[in-house]
Amino acid sequence: MKKYIFILWIFMAPGLVKAQDQSSFTLEQAIDYALQNNIQIKKSVNQISIAKKKVWETTAMGLPQISGNVSYQKFIEQPVNLLPARIFNPQAPPDQYVPVKFGTEQSMKWGLQWNQLIFNGSYIVGLYSSRVYKKISELAHEKTAQKIREAVTQAYTNVLLINQSLDIVHQNIKVLERNLFEIKQMYENGLVELTDVQQLEITLQDLKNQLKYLVSNQENAYEMLNYIMGRKPEAPIVLTDDFESLAEKSADLNLLKTNLNEEKNIDLKIAGNQTRAKKLQMRYEQSQMLPSIVGFVTYGKNAYNNDFKFFEDSQNWYEQSILGINISIPLFGGLARQKKIGQAKLEYENAKLDYEDAQRKLKLELTKLQNEYELAIDKMNTARKNLELAESIEKKEQIKYNEGMGSSFSLYQSRMQLYAKQQAYLQAVAKVIMLKIKLENILGLNNKNI
Image (tube, rainbow, N blue to C red; front, top):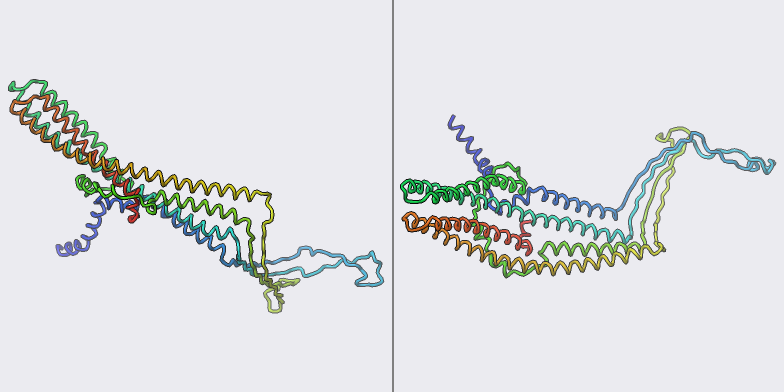
């Protein structure tokens, strides 16, 4: 029995390991997962597929169009025509007519028609426009992916921030509880005043309240990260990156020297594509002044009979075929077309101005982000040093107080300073992480992952 269980474990183990791996994510793994499973990403992928089909739909309009038709007709009452009686009797009076029925009571025909667009300015412009429409969907997907990358980074960082804060608060509570126990004994022995005990109790209660707040937000933070990644909010998830490693990775001074590449920036690519769309709209309005040429060929057969015998061998079928060209030339439209062309030209000019404006704004934004990023890195490094100093000061004040050489007020101040520096350091790291992702997005450095 044990042998079979062992064999079964061998086959199941890879699947179990894989299932465990799916719930553990580094920041980059979480981003990659979201870029495949986020709902907005899936919708933008569908929009690209729709745009591709739209291109084929427009292209198909210029391909041969073949249609067939079959019709059957039976006269309930055949139409009557009047012919001069002299046709049948030369002696008949000139005002005398004879009623005559022409044709048969029943008829059937079938035919095929082939149409081919030879030239149409609107169709040519439409082909280019459909490709621009497809590009709009692709750029929208890229923009969505950048937003998802930024949102995952923020959610992931928020979880780490809460977890790190929880660790710190737990540690601080543990230290304070030990100190409170010791100071109560000192108070009972008359070595310290009651206010020293009460002050420590207040500080401890504040930390416990902070702990409750963090615990209540921790679950929400995990659920939000799962949601953005496209997972079930309640799904188990383990973050394998830690705050310190992300802090080291996020401090990339090379980003301060990188210039804006207009071909990689998504906002400029969208503005450029919008300019092309407005230009094509202008070309479309102009194309309405051009002639449209369509060639066609028709072929069919007709049959006539007083009885329904169209499928018998004795039935005669009569062929007919036509080859032709239709040319449609717009001559005068009351000047409305010229006005539309004028409007389209102005919209195209505005689109070009929007592109120039986007260039200038992005250069200003890049300079601003780089300055903020450099300052944030400096603040993070300073916050780390300040935290180390605050830890050292708090330890010294604790020793001095235990030895009766320090005051409770100085110890309280050093602890409050330590707690503040701990939070300041965590916030500084979080800001560096977020500014880095914003800089990478504006520089187009993450397009390879989209």
